Length: 129
Image 1 (tube, one colour):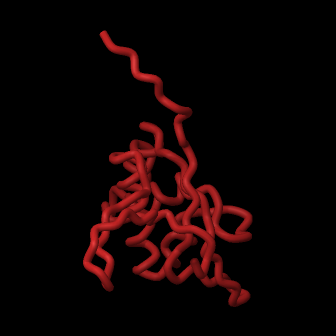
Image 2 (tube, rainbow, N blue to C red):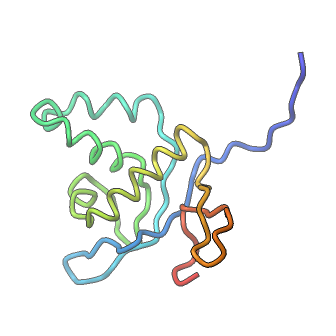
Image 3 (cartoon, helix red, strand yellow):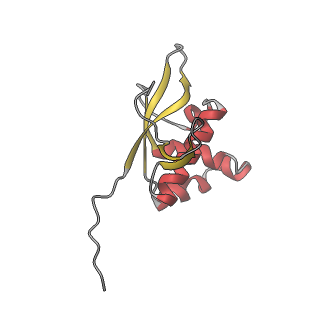
């Protein structure tokens, strides 16, 4: 048996939404944090009456459990996640899939200028980078 040394487990991932959530005061919230999902996170939405009525709510409830910070909002719930632009919801769904199945926020992309294959951190960085 070979023992491989592994670094510490990364459990939280920072991101920057493409568009951002606009709150009631017109403030745009783009920077956030998502944590790894637990088995309970994946199971609990299935007990919610909204999901029993329409399973599309599963994604909103699941993301509301694992998105731990979004801008300066005091809390995140399914109403906040449901109020995101479709682009941002898709971004979070992809980020969720990447960190919970692949364990990384890095994706391969093609440079539009030189057509070379490059690695891009889809979790985002500082806005404007």
